[in-house]
Image (cartoon, rainbow, N blue to C red):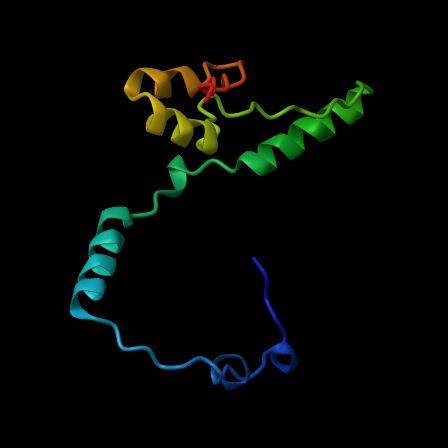
Length: 117
């Protein structure tokens, strides 16, 4: 949470005057309302968990105990696909060749073979 002193708060016109008024179609407005309704809900503080605060507390406890601090490694996504290889495979062969391009977890995607000629 960040609070500002009154002398730090500037007039909103300084920031927003350059933004043009845009006419929004009814369809776009309905879509936006639908998305907001789908994603909105009541905030339940009991269910909120601050992962950053927990990680920071764990780090401080490790330092107090004199344990070495080891940076945690993030897991890489398991469904990474080389789009160019997938597009080439889809043009040349169909579904079976596209599946060959999709990498299994922990593997790199296989490159499709080019036909001679």
